[in-house]
Length: 291
Image (cartoon, rainbow, N blue to C red; front, side):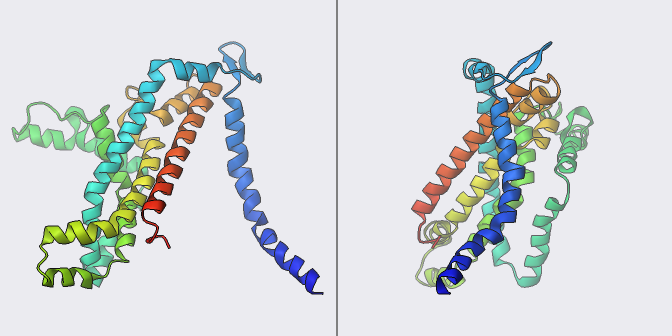
């Protein structure tokens, strides 16, 4: 009897997780596998997609400098966005953590509020503010005589970084804020009573405690920024492509699905390697925090 009961208990977790596992395989693994297989097919303008195993798409990506520049632009924008959100989000999370209960709730709602608005709407808001001669901010600054020509925002990497940083800021703030929940405020008071200045407290006490949160938020922001589509498509347009917009154009404009699949697969592999490697380094460096 005990043996049969043990076998049932051993099978119970598999039975409970089977529906979720089947859903995971059906909606994620199978489409990804089909995309990878599609990247090895051939395509022609008149013959369409041919289900043959060929490395032409991967050879084109490896040898054409255009794709190297496009991927470098993608990761450069993601890195700059991550740095900007870390520089602005970490102090913002620290201030939020030091607020009283009522004000903390209000400002937490302010931080999370943009997540309730479409990414497209938020990006279009930036375009309306700084979009060429008709942008509201540019018109006000030019009418006030502060600037003579509009601030370049549309179709620039700077505009994409600013818009992406605004979109990704809540993820960084929440990551750092979660790390600050483990920080005892009395430690700062004790250091202050022992004569430590504000800079020393930030450098020796606060920064080591929140660094895991900053790094975790950086992984989230980097991966989402590198794979973002709506913001680069609106701000960058067709002049300044990144990996996501290039894959979209290959699928829906030129109809070269195998090449688009190769671009998407390469982006996915690169992001997985970066995220897994960074996460392993963070957990190894801050093993005590993750216990």
